Image (cartoon, rainbow, N blue to C red; front, side, top):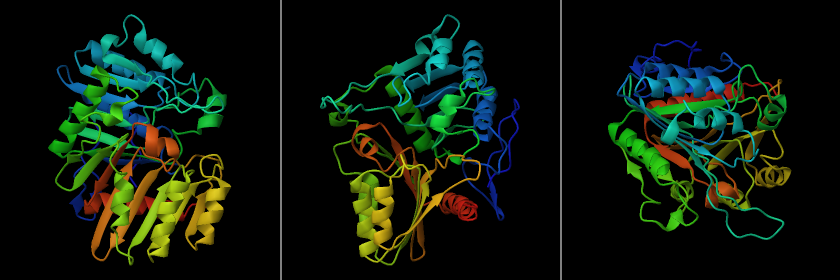
Length: 369
């Protein structure tokens, strides 16, 4: 796991040491073993490091951190090119309001700030099928081009002014989260273009049918996939091709849809060694899902932090013979994530990213429950 990073105007280190090698990207983990606010401090340090003429491009779901919002405003004032796209109707409806007000008022980000409210799918009166911008994407041009994806939203606000929201969301500034930075120029360019396209032309209800909806970005050892799409779910497709003797480890903050359980059940029936670490909250991972997975003999464990901190990580580790892959991003194993929401996922054969995520798995495994 990475060492805690205190906020400063200096950028974070250029990589994480693994043995004698350096991860060719920036990988940071939040959790109870890190200083509170570690991941938001990483973002703050990157904002401070971008000079006039540089660029910052963000897409996120929750944003409540007023100090980060002010840092973006100051970057904008010193001549940094910024685009920021933010979900306008998150699950907690008013969570983003204070940041929206700050960024929208005179002296804020002006046209660089875009509130996204994707039209809802026609639904029965008892249901609300609202596509949401669930991506977490943070791109910076300096000190070197990097695009962060992962599970972290800047959804805390220190000092916290609304404990009720934190009780509902969980304390993401102290809970388990990850920011995985990609520095492959092809991936960075593609993700920056993606962020700017969302900001320039917000997606509509029928975006999945557009020419660019299922456009993947292929880097040297990592492919980026986007949702929504009319083509098959890329993670499901990938796992369906894995051999029966593989070991598969799933870390999931949300498992609710039967379609996801069907995928995992199919892997178990084919003989794959499947292990799942899940969030403790019953709303996020339902008892019905737990019972079905347990009935299949799948090793299933809820991560119950003694302080009640959330386990918000979303990644999969796959080992097949001498080959390994990591799957990570914003996606959940839920119906909205599968079919409606705008999500990002990466499938990577980078061995060092795999090693760092495997270390994170080990930390979770040693968590006292």
